[in-house]
Image 1: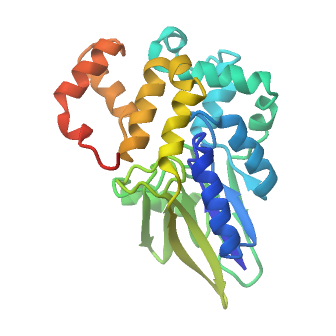
Image 2 (image 1 turned 90 degrees about the vertical axis):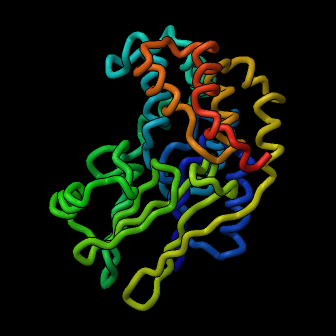
Image 3 (image 1 turned 30 degrees about the vertical axis):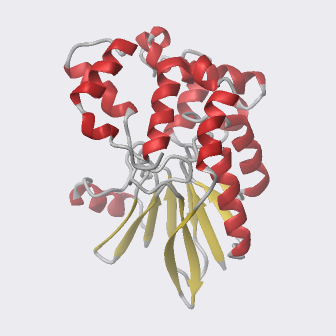
Length: 284
């Protein structure tokens, strides 16, 4: 038995198709899509269609929930976001998915999924942690937090995504894994990345996998689809993240906040001048 956990596709249909082909070659039995299927990239509708066809389970991620909430101006979202240019591409994607009838699908995605097979270690899969989809497992998560998760959600293996970087750690005999990202890796590796679990006797063996894809086509799609024009500043930043396989969007927003600047094109230019090391070209 082989189970693939793929995540953070973020509207990158080119990366997703390459991963699906790779999974066929690996004879994977089950695909779990661990959230953040949409937003950031130009092909959110196409990605949802393929996930609905191929994945046995799809889990809610923070970007999926953001789009779900956007159209109704959910009070959980700051009112100022709706007029902020940094969220222009989010607004565009929310409108598109609403028009295509995908919002109800997003509303029905679960927060986590449990794999509990007799005689096998129990697995909990969640985009972040079982407590929140924005609490991913990574090197900077305090050990105390992971121990609390063990106490509150008993299992043997905990799988998350969210941070866009593959990662693993064992605490008190419990294994924590991060899948990495299919569509927008943040570890400097431009390949589409995911996790495979394989039944090995009465245990699960895990493998961090990656596959090359036509990244130039994925980057060109931002322009060919019109997404870069409709999405404005945020679409441009997401394009730059994909080029460099590293995070920029949240870093820019946090920096602008500390500088008491609006998230405008002028602020983006200032950010690039302030942190030239973030714009060292890693891929193309």
